[in-house]
Amino acid sequence: MTPISSKLPQTGTTIFTVMSALAAEVGAINLSQGFPDFNTSPELIKLVNTAMKKGHNQYAPMPGVMALREQIAQKTEKLYGAKYNPDTEITITAGGTQAIFTAITAVVNPNDEVIIFEPAFDCYAPAIKLMGGVVKSLELTPPDYKIPWEMVKRLINQKTRMIILNTPHNPTATILTREDIDELTALVKSRDILILSDEVYEHLIYDGETHHGMARYADLRQRSFVVASFGKPFHATGWKVGYCMAPAFLMQEFRKVHQFLVFSVNAPIQYAIAEYLKDENSYLSLPDFFQQKRDHFRKGLEQSRFKLLPCSGSYFQSVTYNDITDEKDSDFALRLTKEIGVASIPTSAFYTHGTDHHVLRFCFAKRQETLDKAVDRLVKV
Image (cartoon, rainbow, N blue to C red; front, top):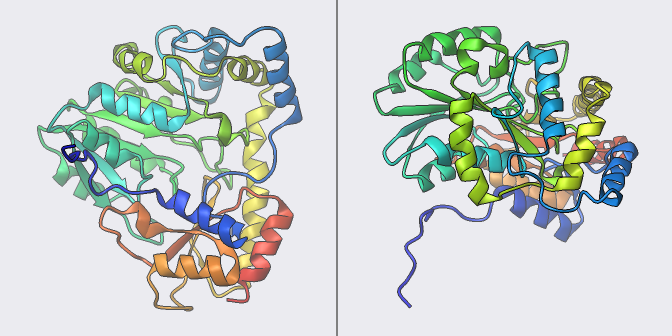
């Protein structure tokens, strides 16, 4: 047969799959891929079971179960003062990644330029390329990974279709500030630029800081796809249920793609989450829950030779290791997994050009005993 011309010739197996597989192979503690090692709420599991017994086992409506969309709309208005119409402006998706892919597919055309900030979650650039778009990446640097807005302005031209943001940020655990919002608002004003805002860690904000999501600001909300997830906050990443919010004119295009990509999402889980969200403590308690884990993990690592980078959100902690070795981050991550028994993610994997700042990312969404065991090993490095 004629050899296939790959649409993504430079894309291989993701670093998350590689490191998780290696951790399983050598019996290492897996702090690489972002998933908890503890279970979700027994109450939520019971609600899923109840929904199944009630017969909610067939196709859900294409945009999602209305009860869930209504709860999302209520939560969003309560938290951010933003009103989204659950009928026309909210769609339930098969996780955050599907929502991101769908939004890009819906509005990015060949030769459109899309600005992303690296280190970036690995699904952004491939989706842009599959649509024939052009990735315009801007590299951020540790320790604070601040967005240089003057540099962003230089990237803007008539071909700029979209800016992709991620707050709280994976892998750096940084968050957008009000100053960032002001810069972004001024930048897109009077320009035909859309925003795709990946906010799957919206409820994991620490130290009393504010989540500056796009829904909070009317000028940005009117041009934004806002993507969120239930997998991260409810410790159920394997359920793959998320959602997208956008103005009706954007959501109309989003749904045109969504209906042919997955059509609809797991019905009983949607009904269960809709009921679970009625208790606002289900999400309001999350910052304290995860901050305790963050603080415990950071306190343990302070005894090591690793240097902690700031962590304002998400459930990741990044560290530098310049005092330990000059190895490439990918080589050091492999050696840590095999010899020390702790798996991490080298952040060079989040840069198009593999930029290596000697930074590793650990996931602290783990049981305390898991974190303690990992710290015991890491302090010996």
